[in-house]
Length: 313
Image (cartoon, rainbow, N blue to C red):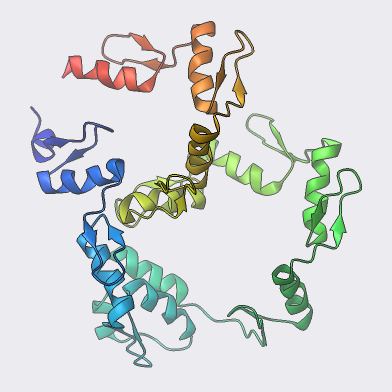
């Protein structure tokens, strides 16, 4: 057994991730079980980790242990302080305040926000945002009012801004003006092309501050981070089960409705999730995309490969 495996000898039976000690594994398993053993004595809200409960309790006690060294304002969480510091754009933090940031990643986040602030003069009456010009403010307020003056003449869908309508029209025209120079694939929007290019460059600019795992999209990082916080903001209205992402909630609702929108074109069997249909189609195509590097055997499912790999250890 290698020195590395000895250091991480505790393995999760669900996702096979390794941990250095049993307490870390026990805490990790709550990601899969949804267990929240730490309860707030005031509002009875549950948390997967004791530290998260401690942060939550400050909403009741109004304790604010993190203080700005420049204006002495206090905050309940370190992240709140970091976000606040961006307002002090023309002052340098003291060496004492720098020592308050224990992790390099958090210090980097602080320095990133510590840039010159734009002079935003026009404040929105609906939210804390400030805009540079009056015309920007007028356009911004329309988002709060729900105004959508730009309507598609084909499907009558409406949009708050003209460029949103312009982007939408490509759905009807089939226009894809943005081209990948590597594989010649075309896209309707520049942002979609930029995301696609990361498949070629292997760029993953969004990094988790807890485990340093990197992602190609910010949305993927946000979703991943809920594994660490235990946050599950989406709830089933029927059985009250909680979910970390919206798609999981939508998929779960089909358990109650019985809906199976994904149909196999070969045998007409229906499924509640698209990924289940993808797995099923491999029965017809014979495709086995998961390859064992040790013995060369191929598998239809990744879980089958993971189970098989245990025979080589």
